[in-house]
Image (cartoon, one colour):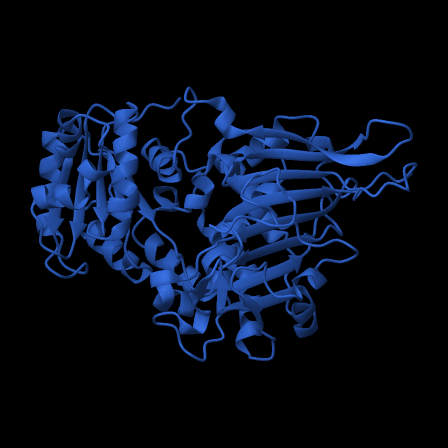
Length: 504
């Protein structure tokens, strides 16, 4: 375990929902589990006026942790403070600097400071510039780190511009681009599953794997995010960031060690090896986009995407995106990858499915079993790992059925607390571990792969298919997968693939 040094956490955009809903609860849990250093303080910064006490009430600690004593909650809340920026982030930070220096001295934070930018990306450079003007990027007396939230760019061009803007004031080693998906234990376990088990790593290549499938499904619609989502869409919102990071963990070569930079170097190589698709015909054959339509789910009428609040009635923004692509290296040559993400699916689930090739010599040809073995890594919910393999049916002959070999994280019990994503990521940043944070070149590589797809869809020639809310996407989706295979439509329960799911 790394040591967590004394430090100050400054959260820009602290009056927003993320601070109350995710960041402060994560910090409280870290405090409760004794992960925070002895000398620690949090300074919320935003454009609306609040006192320290009002800020503490706004993050609603009392309502979230009723099982804890009022005294314990009060002790933690005394570490929370607030500073008003008077309506603008691009201003002189003289007063903010004075407050930071005061808290640093009072709480003995040793000049170690994390700046968490929970603001729109358009403000990143302005905040970095004004911090630098007051010397708050200077590491001579203590380290300084900058955490930035997604979306990191809207395209390759804008991502480069954001990177260039931040690099004018902070070194790359100081910048932590957060992706909460990488904070999930089951995402990190992909590395352990691969590199700590000789039953998997020797098979992790084109000789044994037929294809790889990743599904990210959400049962809800765009809800109150219609205005944002209509400018983004499924490909930008999930595929370019979260899902390509999953792909990188699956594709990457073994790093020399568990050192953060070694892991990030291999992830970068993996993203660079994705075969770019630029030919319109190739893009048409290997991508599908869709949009959910009004439907009825369990007797309740559900709006179509174009009927949602703040969505253009003529919108062609995709709520379903599926992409087939290849990886140009020895390990994965000719192995297709299928990745899909969508709103208004039958259930909320994210999983990786490794489809192994069938044995070259089949002696049980009369079996009704779908012959390929599968390794399923469930990210959420019902987190765990499932192996599907053939077993003999009791009785005469050699009838074969599929058997399940599974592991569930919940089986570890209360003794092994599974940190929430923001708990893990905040603690890593506090300890200077950037393993689960995206580097500038990673972000740009992901956009370099995604941009041609977005450009192709934007031209208007690509079809956009409708699908009823509550089904597994457009009827053409299975046509994307070559051969007799089709998407695995998972249920909330990891081992349940009976063909239907409980609607959340």
